[in-house]
Image 1 (cartoon, one colour):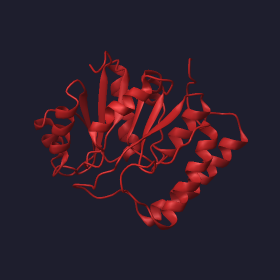
Image 2 (cartoon, rainbow, N blue to C red):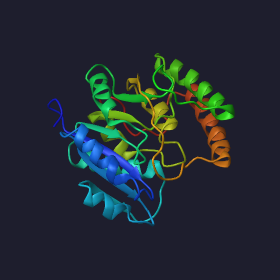
Image 3 (tube, rainbow, N blue to C red):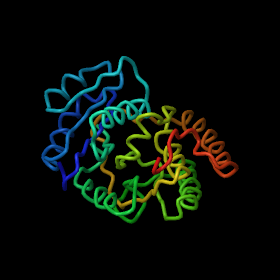
Image 4 (tube, rainbow, N blue to C red):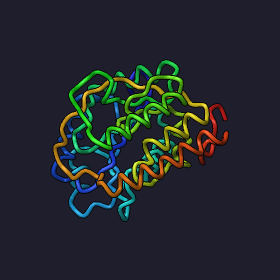
Length: 245
């Protein structure tokens, strides 16, 4: 329990055996009241064994689904076990668990989904070239949709409340990076309040980034279509429930 709420840290992991134990230990030391679920996304190394030995609960997927698929499984776990808050923390050490209380504090306000933003005045993380331009365009349009300033809509460091856990357990995009932008668009369209808090992103300690120029190009084309649909219809883009229902 943290401040009277049951909090689950969901950690998607793919071939992170070299560093996941240290990340789990840091989370336990920083947030002793939170439970940790590692979703082993079809790893071919010893991620599952290492994570269990470090004290995490582990859900092992039979094959690699990507972050979105792993997170959907994590949200279902959180919903089935009646958690109040679910927080995504990457297994590569980039997300600092010391920022979690700030995300929780914003959830205690009016927010339903809180993102840790890398481009909000804290830290030295930079993205350059077409990737940065795409991030700026996405942040501009999603800020308009959310009616609040969002600077980092591709952040995977995010917390959601009980209502969104219920929704995401039933529907969550599994496509490449759909777990960030598409899920945020859908939450906004369904009436959930989205906000951000500034965080500093740390260097990756282990593992291999999932992004590539080819994947990024496909993703940006797909997101362009999603944005077009979001502004041309009143649906929630596949979200199977709306806030308060």
